[in-house]
Length: 263
Image 1 (spheres, helix red, strand yellow):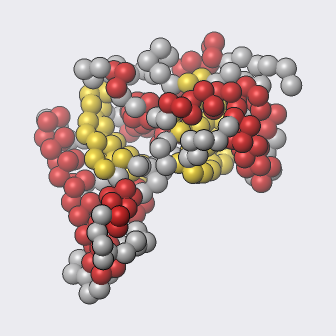
Image 2 (tube, rainbow, N blue to C red):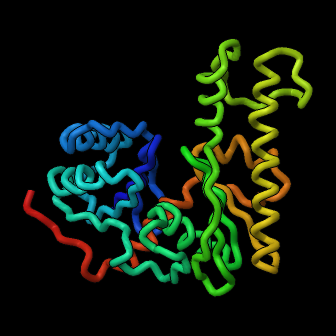
């Protein structure tokens, strides 16, 4: 089995693969001050809950946009799974060319998403990842990562509205019945959700125009299921796109990436 781990600013998403099959997956909150032991014990508990044997994990592949947690996850992998993890970075094979001015500035999750999107849907493609930030990534017809756009995530936008206004309450992010809200909560929900859908459509339209050809638009990330149905541009919602990209990258690098330890 392969354990894929995507470390984001708000959540750590984990998936267990048996071959190409995603057996199970979990989403837990990112705790930047957790130790390797704390993460290891928590993940072992998830394995037991799913009735999976952690000793069957043969490889761990990681993408991380939280630098302080990367060595923590690496240590956890070595201590609890006796595996040196494959960490996504510029030095490993991804199968795509990165056409960014400084490739080191591109988040590992964005590269992983591009790998999965091109493998599953071909190019050109646009990936919209609804996480702490909402990222828009353009992939060419030939599978090149061209760049994209970064916008504040819908969750932190809602938090900012609550935190910076005296009379607006903290609300549940849910679809309101109408764009014309009849109370404060529904008015905020309409402004956030429908307004965000407009932001997505506008940016996708501009990116498509710059690509000069039609591009398939794929949504992923924790908020994708909420926002994507309200847009006109998103064609596919693929919640586990990042995990699939991690699996594909592991396969490309599996010749020398695995180092088993002694239990």
